[in-house]
Image 1 (cartoon, one colour):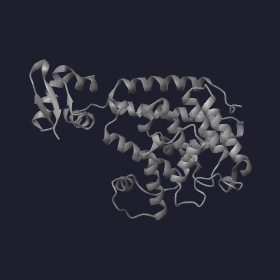
Image 2 (cartoon, one colour; image 1 turned 180 degrees about the vertical axis):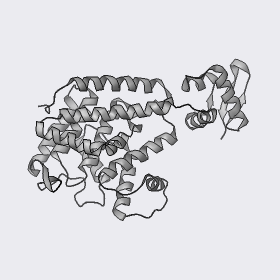
Image 3 (cartoon, helix red, strand yellow; image 1 turned 180 degrees about the horizontal axis):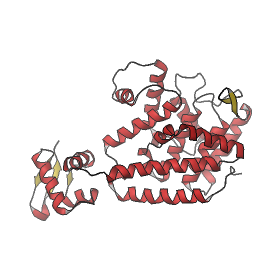
Image 4 (cartoon, helix red, strand yellow; image 1 turned 30 degrees about the vertical axis):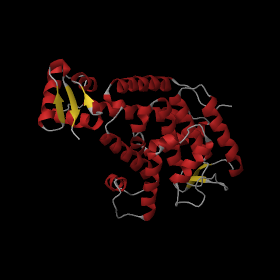
Length: 318
């Protein structure tokens, strides 16, 4: 039996808008971001997802931890970040349709933070808001069965991946399968579901917008609880995803200098290339601009040039 939800006009509009933006991203270089941009977005993802849970470390501190530098901060917060770094670094090692993989991810994410990491909770739990119980999760003895059914939906449903990822996120939060770490697992697993169909989501920090609209995030969860279906949460999350993709495209639309283009290209090029291949990445510049860029790159010692005219080949200097 599939979890309850309705496909509204807003959901259809958001799916169309998201699909259009993914197409634009795939048509440009943003489907393969530079190592620098990947790193920046990974830092934003980890910072935002953990900040929602009360982690106090800044993006600069998280950057230092990624670079294996020592920082001063609460031990628990540092451990949360180190765990998240390890998990996000091995995203492709997890199977989004596997409950065992799901438990393994929780074990790694919550290592050293709770005694029952990687195991479903054994006790009842209520989610508090303003001193009141906002949501009473299903009894602990029901959790294994409910999660098995949820993963069955994930495997067998023919629903669009965009919608399915939102449904899983909400239903997992409703079941609240763990004693702690449910929020960060919901956001992690939605990312994992999305990147199976749309690899670009590995580099889209939609958690950043959830963090900025945190009240609306919890409001959408609450509305779905009250209505008995995930429709309000699907609408909220699709808006978040749409806004995240817009921000990615907005980054691309900024006016870039020759130095900006050369720096970016030097991070993603694979040693040898032609002017045409350079223009395939920056498809909004003229051939004359591309030639000027590459000449400048040679002058700066970024590339070396071999051949002449149509047979010119450029190589990245080691």
